[in-house]
Length: 296
View (cartoon, rainbow, N blue to C red):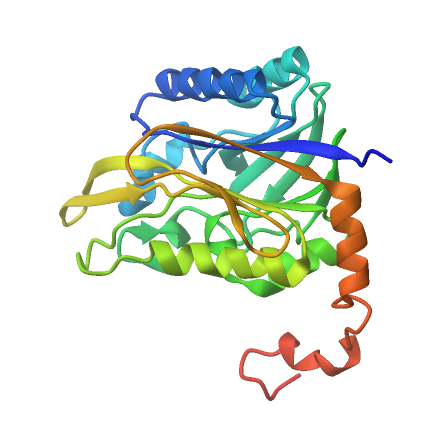
């Protein structure tokens, strides 16, 4: 019997600091993914412009826009409906006096299924997100799209196994991680790409689900309060299968449209028979509710 097939795509491109240019690039690549048969297409994190979090600048906060009537989301809704594809859309959200690193999930008929707001907010040289973003308040969510139940988290969230497990426990059949990661301005010798990839391969294998990661490429220079800051984003976008195996991967320099097909019914059968959800002991995991491993 034929299973429930889904074709996934991760996009990868260099951003300019011009919104219209970047949105046009994203649309061009979504169309290319659709032409290759994609059903769900992941665009990288905060793709409307440069990764502005290299600096702590008041003027950059003005880049935020409300979710309702957001022009890029509206454009992607129209595109999703035209092509019949699912598109998670990353954006800098203004919500009254709060600001979030958010993603709107657009279904294949153009419906906005709602938001996920990034839960884990980094604060390190070159990645000063706590200046801009409140910690997300949505919790980890699953969105029922035309093609699959999906869990979507954002960049730094991808380092936390708890986030991946929470989404799959709620029924996510595929995990998606839009990303902006590259060199470390304070240490040119530090290259996290292999670590970054292996951690997410572990999420796929531990939860027995496919996983899609989309990262940007290119060198971006931002004027900060201390002078120029530079990050070279290392791309390496990929799609992993349900045992953590890499089934499609990009390099660190080239624009890419990755494609991978999965049989969700076959994977579901494997996930259930493997026993990692059957044999869980939630009553023993209360230590996870603590920060120090003691107070819970």
